[in-house]
Image (cartoon, rainbow, N blue to C red; front, side, top):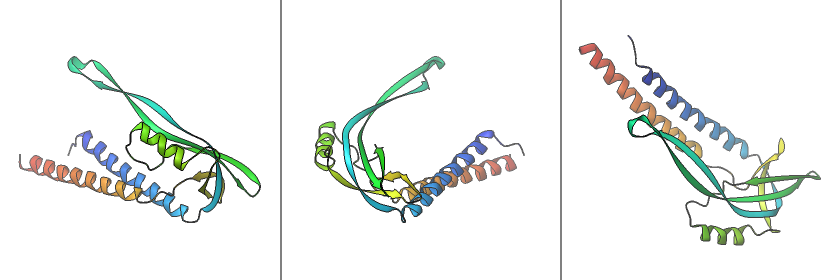
Amino acid sequence: MNWNPVFYFCFAVGLGILCIGYYFQKRSQSMENWQVAYAKILSSEIIQRTSTSWTSGQNLRSVSKTSVETLPLVKYEYMVFNKKYTNETNTLAIGPIQVSELEKILNEKFPTGGQLKIFYNPENPSDSVLEKESGLEYIFYILGAIWLTVWAVAFIVSSLVRHYM
């Protein structure tokens, strides 16, 4: 049988989504053993990241779409075994929010010069996070399972159509 390459591509995408879920599961499991340290906040600010995506418009002309993402950026330093480490994060779990509200949260929760609890990897102390990840792997497992289920149904239907035509 000669299958459309789209079937193989879609199958690979489904497996890729499951692999991402597996990665997040392993990282989450390893974080269970991460140690706690207290860090000094060096700065907290709002950054804007611009990204451009290209799509095909009418008459096959490329059309660009630019989007701006507003993120909180917190820089901090901490000590592990008398060695100083500096890190930053822009992945705080705050959710969609107005910029003015985000500034208020940053000033209250992450004031420059303040202290906060962080988690660091004892095997690599330069690897640290403000919040332990949890549950993210399940989202990818569910998405991967849905994707592969739709792929399998399409595959079976296509096979039946080819067989009976």
